[in-house]
Image 1 (cartoon, rainbow, N blue to C red):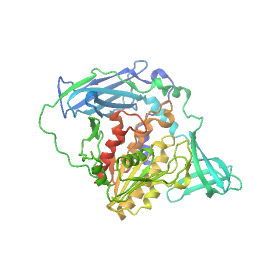
Image 2: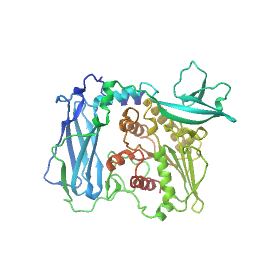
Image 3: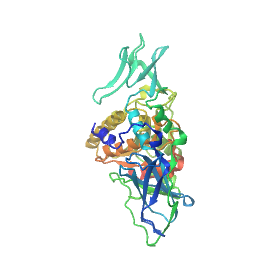
Image 4: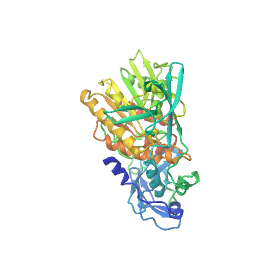
Length: 476
């Protein structure tokens, strides 16, 4: 409840009654507070945003969801900015200028504060936006039944509960079939919304992701000092990852708090993976890491596990170098219309409790995308259970390396209520808050995908490559 209350305190307590009082990107303005004719590499750039509504009135409260980045296209360079909310309609965006050239500024009002208040209220109202269909099997007989985190208790129900961790999932019980023979699940969007008609209007595509006008489109940056850049320590597990955590240059990621090792050849990558057992746990963006390593390391061979429907478990082995890779999806909720095998299911904290750990063991975890359409308390509970499992793992096996991958940004189309990046932003705050006292490493995919401006739940290969290089640096 404490974490939930901290998140709630960030959300404006308002009810939308008049669209003219909604924050307007077109009416608002942004101004550079420290203007110079010439900036130097390493300088800070401070931009102030004054938010106005559609009437042209200055906003008196905060909560607008803003994405900010700087870029130099011809250098394939970019970085995100840190947005500071003064809760009175004024915002500061903090940028660090870390490369030479003409640096363009982009400040986008992704959702107005009235939309954020509506999303938060709607998200935490109930579980009904997604429903699950389970297939319960008995020999040649199979019956489909509705499943979910919350069902009408007037009917006979199969309860799949983990008492220790307060995790539960339910299906309606078909007559004469056993609850233990639930074999497959699928999920579907329910024709339901917790938003009012007025609130829905805010999230129409033409009303989202609008650029806020600026008094200057760009700044020019020189290398005034001409001295060699500071040599950073190699990225190590346990280092605190700031925000922004790095920048893109020549389409490659460069952390600002540590240095990435060189993994430009297949041999360097395979040498790093040698004699390691690496478990990727979570969603399909963690599976992308598994797939990238499988495709770029010649010695790794995929083991066909004959999983029908959606992939839920993947294994690859390099016997010569003694490398074992595994990806396994997290348990409920998985939002996917293709069916998947339930018997592969295990909550990530349950998977970790079954791992011995040790010097050759690496664990990669990514949770978030599939939790966006559900009340945030579900995600908070899952992350707290994961924290407990990791705490026990480090007690018995302190040499185990654990990497937390944060969520990617995505294009939510016209379905902001279920999949808005605002939900992902809240998830990333929760993850960093809960795991801050554990000896884990963070690959900040949220920061990276804002900088790269990919807006795709499944990042393109050049972004995955940057994430993988940082991951390999942490484990080698």
